[in-house]
Structure formats: structure tokens, C-alpha cells
Length: 257
Image (cartoon, rainbow, N blue to C red; front, side):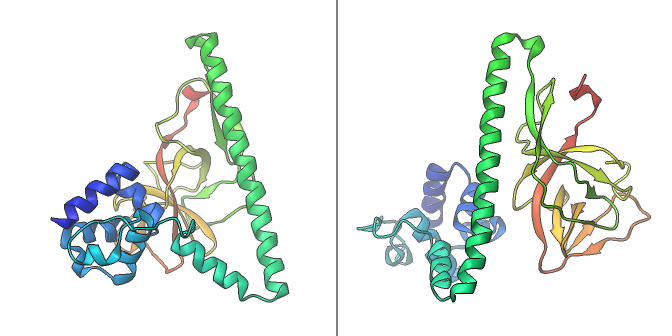
């Protein structure tokens, strides 16, 4: 089946369907449905996106074959990037200045974060040479708390380096405190949480969400965010909700001993 060949090609180039879903800009559940139900039932735009990122000929795929484009070097941009460029070119001077300002700030923030991660990696490697008993693990730590209650205004702070004496959970991107009691007994007010940055989690998992300009630590339900404390009602999800990460556990005192 063409879907099996397409899935094999995706895994060959991107290791997993979930990783490819991020690269192509299609939700994992939608991509999984395409591979299971058939490309002929998929949205045309999604098929174009898949072919564009993989360098596959759209016409051939529609005919049940996977063939690489004869010339995939004509553009180094994804469909989303080309759309952004077209929008930018349509702006007036004021609009371009606004976009340039935000872009410069975000570029500087990401460059700073990348430098800190590289420093952390080198610090970990250097510590490993000293001896296992002295190894320090370095993670990014945010001081502003996330809400396990009625919501917390999202901050724009830069993270600081946090040294740990034992390895954090695999996939940890950063740690941050939680405020409120709506997630008790799972997570308590003041707990430091290990979080893996990801744009999508499965229903039933606890994650960090941005919604209505506020951050929340909640369990993902069907169209709602769920508290573990029975005194709190589920919160209906709005269209602007963004998943920021998956909670991996609590960074307790044993990580600092």
C-alpha cells in the first residue's frame, strides 16, 4: 500500500511520525489518520505539504506511486516560510519595522538559549571526566510559576542555569515551579516540575498550556483541561490554546543533595 511506503519514507528521514508532524506543520493525529485511512481521503493542502517537505512528486503520489521530484532544489523554503515571506512583502514600512523588531528579539533570545545549552553540555562533559560522584547536570530553570489553579499570566523571562547532582528525566527541556493546589495530590503548590517542550501531548497526560494569555498545568482531556483536585471544575479549551510542554515529574530535593 502507498500509505505503508509513505510511512516508511517518513520514518527513514525523520525517525518518527511525531517528529515529521512537527516538521511538516500537520498535527500528529491528522497525519496518523492520513497514513491509516488513505491519502485519497486526505485534505489536498496536507498532501501538498507532505510532498513538499519530503521532496515527493504530488502527481505520482496521487497515482499510487512515490517518486522524488525531478528538481527539489528550486526552493529552500517550506510552504509556511514562503507564505510568511509573501505576507512580509505586502507590509508597509511600519509593519516591516514591527516584524523586524520582534524577529530580532526572538533571534537574540534563541541564540542566547542555544549558547546556554551548549555551555551546559560542555559543563556536563567536563564534570563527567572528574568522576561519577561529582557529576553535575545542568538544566534551564524558570523562576516565574505556572498555575495549577485559576491561571497565571505568562511571563517573558530568560531562564537561568540550574545544576543538579543526578540526571533529570530523559527529554527534560527545563524546570519551572507550579503554584496552586488544583493538581493535588499529583503536584503540589511550590513543586519544581521537569518539563519537555513539545507542541502536542496525548489525552490523559499532564502538560503546560498557554490559553487566554495565561499558563496552566493541567491534564489534557477531550476539549477541556482537567484538574486532579476534585474541588476544581474542568476548564473548556478555547481556540487560542497552545501546548507548551509535557510534565515529566517533580524535581525534588534529591536532585540538589
